[in-house]
Amino acid sequence: MKKIIATIVCTMCTAAICAQLVWLAVDKQPFAGTYSRNFQQLLTALQNQAALSYVPVVTAGAGTERRFMLKEISTHTLAVALPVRHGGFGLHLQQSGYTDYRRQTIGLAYGRTLGDRFSIGMQVNYLSRIIPQYTSAHALVFELSCLMHLTPQLHIGMQAFNPAGSELQRLDNEKVPSIYRAGLGYEVTPTFLLSAAVTQETGTSTATKIMCEYRIIKQLSLQLGICTDPQLSNAAIGITLRQLYILLSSSYHPQLGITPATAIVWQLKQQH
Image 1 (cartoon, helix red, strand yellow):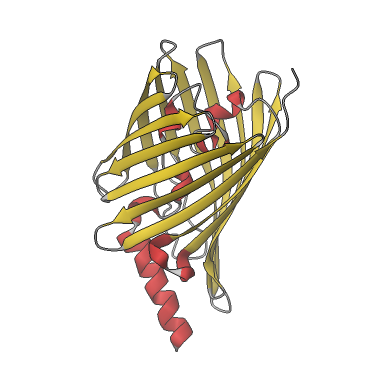
Image 2: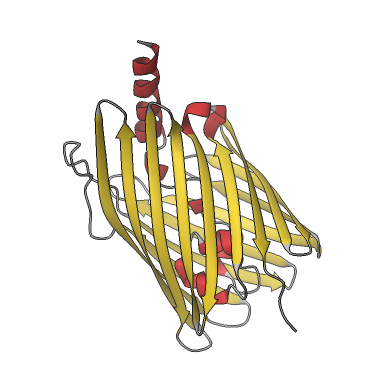
């Protein structure tokens, strides 16, 4: 009985309370660096696949978050980026939930440049939802994205998650939400970036997020953000140690509380 109750609570919490982010964990929420050129790295490429074309060397990362401090809806992520001529490939693996309720995503992405100022990207995701000994469901979902660098300081980007409106099979054909996002980034100085993003999910109100990133020194950066509907504020500290990048972050919901997250990214040493 406890397992059944826990599964129901987790499902309601994920689908109802966090409807805007049902398939998108913290690593898919926009960071300030998502809409930039000089602030890009693996974590921002997860949010806009067009940025894979700016990852210079083989890069791998792992991240985890405990949404609202609930172990049952914790999310774990692995990602790898492989640069190729004029672009790059990415592999994204994600799992959330616990023994009796799991959601999984496997994503294969590609991004490439089209000239000096424009890049495009796409990703194919295999989504699955599993309740052992009860039911399972799956869907194939596409993402499309682009980045445009209007000037060396001003950048814009767009992304569409599931524009085809795919459904989860074998679970009453539940629809996976279609999510559209557009963002703008302005590099005020080489060390300070200010960004804004607007997100629209089918059937919900528009969410707006304002973000900034400040590189205090080469090895240390600070990120701040605030989002409307759902009401979320977040802060993060980025630490760079040679080829290693560590991100310690936390977001806060006024009713549901804190979501801590950690990510570690390693990249191959660049040849000069």
